[in-house]
Structure formats: structure tokens, C-alpha cells
Image (cartoon, rainbow, N blue to C red; front, side, top):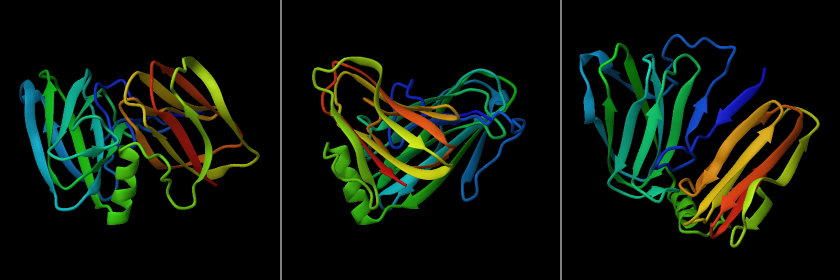
Length: 260
């Protein structure tokens, strides 16, 4: 079964590890599936249209990673905003915008955000339609040293990988223009669990790094609007996986670390 994980950055604002739309074609897509440990909120779309209406608020006593899991059984796009009163690491903004289509079963929109202590709120805009939107969250406190490590990356010091991760490659984006250019090839002779940590210090221009393989692909590991993709754990099938870079008018660099 061919698997694709899209870390889609076609949003105006994004942060943290990136947005992932998970779509496993062999699984059922007819119901909401809240992951263990998540706190669900269901919005009934048939009650009437909403324009930037507040759904709920959260309060973080300490820096945390807040995981958002979204599904909907209704056709059409639903607009979700996550607004933070404090810094969101890996993002140039404190407002994260997502568009949620019809995703149920094993198909979802998921984004983990590294957020400093403080209040955040979730808002929705949609037309009146039959169906619902599920917005589930899970808050996990970050150790102070872990938050400090991520903050250094957020501020542009990319030489701060997690323990056990080794640098695969780095490239300066200054004066570089390319389209899907191969930067590095990862060859696996057996199925293997790997960890990826991908960072960029680009603050202008356009940049996108993808990992493309025959059986699985990860698109938009980092972009100019999503600077940190930290400790992405995945199991890759045997074969070749190519890191491809697209950039123009960007500054800074891209750095990739791997744990095998």
C-alpha cells in the first residue's frame, strides 16, 4: 500500500512540526476517531453559519506542545484559526490558519504546536451545512531544557538537534534557486524506524523541503512559514528516499538530522 503523509503548508500561517494530512487508503473513513489522550470538542455545523466564532480557549501554565487533531464529516472547507497570546516556536506569527475538508476515519488534519505559557483560543468560520467538525487537543508540558533547545532553533541557531540525532546535510539558501533538486538520498535495505529533525532559519523568500520515496513521502517538512519539524518518528519501507529542495530568494539555511 502506498502511503503519503502531506505536511501541507498551503496555509497562510503555520508553525511547530507542521501540518499533516493523514490518508491511509485501506482504512475506513466513515467516523471520527479521537486519538487516545485527546480532549474532543465537536462543532455542529447545521446550527447556522459562523464567522470567526470562538470555539474554546486553553490556558498553558508552562511551555507545552499542544497537539491539534481535526476531522469533519461535512463537505466543503471549514476555516480554523488558532491564536496564541504567547510565542509559537517555529512560526513567524502567533495565529495559525487551517482549512479542514471532509476527513473522517483514519484521515485527519493534525498539527503539533510548541507554545510558550499563556492563553490560546480556537475559532471557526463555516457555512451552514449538515455535519460536524471535531477539534481535539492534547497538551503536554515541555521540560525547561527542551523548550530552551527549541527556542534556540526558533531564533536561528540550528545546531541544536535532539540527543541521538546526527546531521545528514545542511545547505545555505543564500543566492540559491532550485525546484525539486535532490539534496541527499537515504537508502534502506530493510524496513526501519527512523527519526527526522529538520530546521530552517529562512526568514524571507520561499523554501520547501520534501522527503520523497516509493512507498511513503513527506511533503513540506519545513517552509518559510514552518521552521521546525522536530523528532518526526516514522517507519520507512526498504528503498530509496530522496530529500528534495525548492527555494527562491531565501536567506538562512536548511539543516537535516537523522536518528536510526
